[in-house]
Length: 389
Image 1 (cartoon, rainbow, N blue to C red):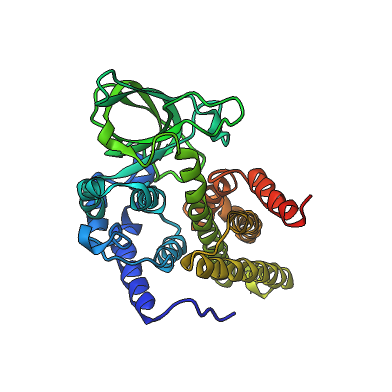
Image 2 (image 1 turned 135 degrees about the vertical axis):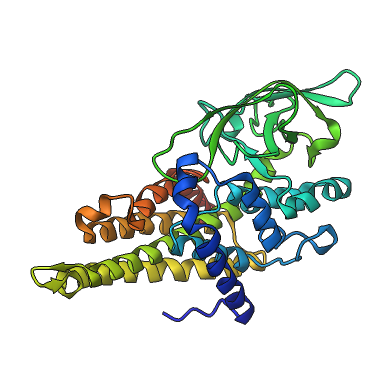
């Protein structure tokens, strides 16, 4: 089905990305997976290419683009080659939104120029051992010093994407006890310098997929954080997290639809070249029917995503909309990738084939950004709110 969301500028950007990935990423990707992340200087290359500054306002050294479509093109090109830019997706896809919406003018001047160049890489630390999707249960604490000049941060985080190489981490912590009638109050976000005394990167976690993206445990032991590094208002972090989850879940949906499209193309390429019983695998009716099913599902997912991106760009994508996008597209991606791997036969189980990487990498999409069970809760709540029940 023809897509109408892109213009000629997007096409030029796509071509430059495709060339960059072919030259700077694909030849080195096996080494990145073994190391668990790209080399640190690769992020400066992304800064030079303008990837990190795309949505940063011009006065802070960026391009000032506001449309999500640019991020969409990036996701599609990475997935097309079954690679990633490591943990840097969190840098732009998650952290930038918080900085743009909640940072003071002074903070933007201090942080955004180095953000855009890749000199300072960001991660965000929400999840804690034992809390999972229950963000209101966060126990990492920050206590204001007696003279009011800094916070003392203590606690631990886990599953932190980009946590190994990050220079600053947006840490969600409790700065005051939650009242008994509202557990969501009392949470704040601190921008923590990772060179601070008492800040420690623990284990680099060994995942079943996404091997080129560093994921770490973090701990804080009496870490001093200047009050000037409080992001937004004290005690209001939970509402900030909810607002930014819309973008995060949309991003997961974009990547999932692109993953399904890439899997189909990998399967077409393989079944066309592979011969069984004297005929290409693509000549068998089962192959054609399976790919037809996959194509229909991917088209539905892509149509949903394209509409959601248009709504997001005009500020009309709701939390329930984003939950629907994430739920539907991640389930479609899982089914499509599984079917396309099956068409590869035994070779689909070999990591030298990109379909195997898609298979393991896409599994987490139904978990992060809020599990798909959480998405169902969000959607159901919106349905009953509409009916007044």
